[in-house]
Image 1: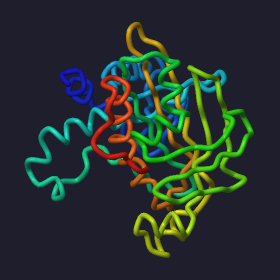
Image 2: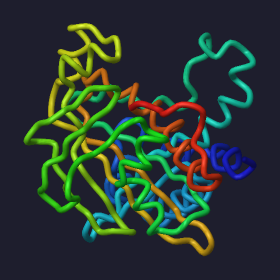
Image 3: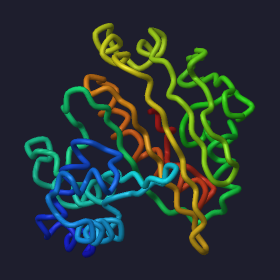
Image 4: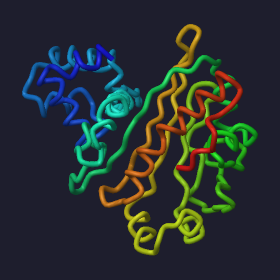
Amino acid sequence: MDAVFKALADPGRRHLLDSLNRTSGQTLRELCDGMGMARQSVSKHLAVLEAAGLVTAVRQGREKLHYLNAEPVNAIADRWISRYHRSRVQTLAGLKSSLEGSTMGFSYTTYIATTPEKLWEALTDPAFTRQYWGAEFTTDWKPGSAMTWTENGVTIEDPEQVVLEADPGRRLAYTWHTFTPEFAAAHGFDADWLAAATVGSRSKVVFDIEPQGSVVKLTVTHDDFDPANVAFQGLAEGWVPLLSSLKTLLETGEPLPAPVPV
């Protein structure tokens, strides 16, 4: 946690985090344009932020995209702010952007004492996903294949629910499920929420798996949200306990007490 506070102490690094909070998935060039700072200086700041776990970089082709990782900030909030009426305090680093005409997203990184093969199984095998997620996916896990989601007693089918990438033990990506009336009813959401949750394009989630010695680094990036999509905040908050439950299951054999819906 000392590294987090050290990283946040510099105004230039806070400005970078603000920029990623407003618009996620930026390249180094885009961040430099908004900083008015030399490329080398921005690179050094990003290295400090990445080392502190506040920024996650995901390579896409020749580009490296940078995302705000809210997990360390969430840990600070859990440790201190909850003691002083968190509901009265503004979020330290809000994930939501109100930037007109852009898409939003977020990224989380965690380290799990497991193998890439076991983590892949936990992300794709219904016997695992039922335990920490309460959801099942029916698909052959081939790019372009349809996915059927079953969660909280609701089965969701849609031709746009598809596998985007599947490289076992390395990378998995798929589009998010459809927000159907049945899904909304199962979770207690009303018609207004359903209408707002289906605004804009369908979001997607990407799991990047990297072996790091005796542990595996898992980076989850969920993006392509329309700024007006009300599902964004709930999903941003829901991934934190879900990933904690996944980590606990793989390291201890038991998930957290109840599956985490997102």
